[in-house]
Length: 137
Length: 73
Image 1 (spheres, helix red, strand yellow):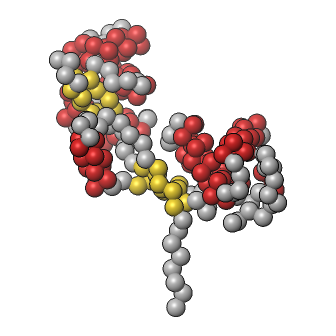
Image 2 (cartoon, one colour; image 1 turned 180 degrees about the vertical axis):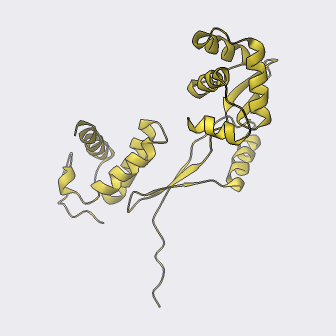
Image 3 (cartoon, chains in turn purple, brown; image 1 turned 90 degrees about the horizontal axis):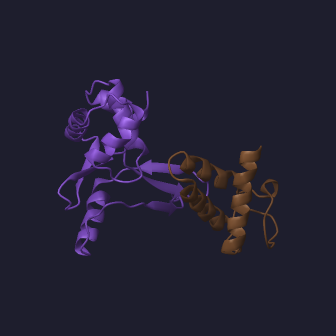
């Protein structure tokens, strides 16, 4: 079971073959596909998938906060997976990579983009540091 | 700095360089989570911390070689 499927099961979503196909389509997407896009791509892998199934699955994933629903003023929604979002702090001396999440930082990034007149769509951030040495007493 | 090899121009050999472990640790951790070019950039920053005397181009060549060596072996 993929990490994503595991997250879906944990969130209470029963995994079926068709839902797995839809998750695979979302996982492979490098864009923000619409319901139609997801349907077209899923149909290539499983002909039995209907657009109603895609609608229902995306709605469920949205309710469970497993996808992010974007409204780009096109009259329809586009979706992307809500990956387990984190950043990296890299210890320059040892090369150790520490994953972290920070709610204040997430809000700040959205706020900065907004102040510059943008909706934040994507970003990447890596911190590089040197461990602070504690003074010996 | 933690590396004790003489300052030289161009690519450094992994075996001669004490920072090799740190650089590759960063690359391996990052590449499991991010695209290869992001992992490469992070590894180069770690390398440049240990070798501030290197030019960007030399640092890039050295880290690229180390990463490729790892794939070959």
